[in-house]
Image (cartoon, rainbow, N blue to C red; front, side, top):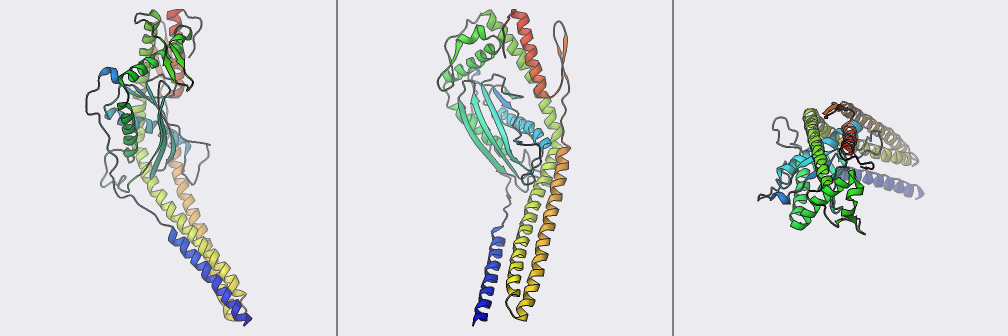
Length: 403
């Protein structure tokens, strides 16, 4: 009686382990997005008066890199992410321009540019299959319009070479951001918009001459800027600042040419990377699923085999040995599949490493000299702002300026 009870326990254990393995297998399913439809872009249905147009600055997206090491689970490659940070900003700018609801829309290297509306974003996930970004929109008053996470999964047809689709695989993300911004702007009063435009100008002026323009702006308890007064339209200091601001706009417009060229040059290899990454992500998911399932089933078989081998009868011991051998094979198969998945990751790493960007030096002609700006686009803009400060000092003779 004791032997039969032991055999019953062994059988029950085996059935439990087998059931757990089958449940694990059944829980692992994948979903393919088969439609290429995405959120359409909302276009302003009426001509906006000039005094209601707000300029927009889209800061290069934060690549979302916590370290320079590759994350094998999330397929994060530093070189590629830095290139994407520019690509996403330019693509979003194109959507905003197409909505016909804004003034000048520019991609800017940093938030130091005082502009009516500033858009910042962080890339949370980008692997060809899924794009997730965190976006914050703030106006020059300091009011946060919204902070929102946007995500979209690419269709399996997005990268179909036989039947290519128009637009970006994640165009819906850019359209939804643009639509949300347009809805918010449409709710603003004429007075609020006029104040924003003036605050932007006063903040720019104050960055060059705090002594002359500090008195026109204050920040309330909530950290929001408010106008306390306005300089006269013919104020000579204001006229100089406006000339400096126009030069700054011209330089930032020059940068738009760089961003456009950069995106155009990276578009073909980037879309190829996205297409391959899309396939690799799905293949790796399937490989990891099989590896995990084989490991679970292998472990269950080994444990069941050990229990059966201790059952006492010759048949049970023989069955146990077979179970242990089979379990070992399944576990090895799981490890082999994981190694294959790692090989795919390394292939993606090589693609990511190949996406480098270089910035041509910018030559600026001044009345008394020629200046060459070098380095990254961020460094060139920083050098440009320093140069503007020198120009302002020379024109005003100011002894104390600050950016």
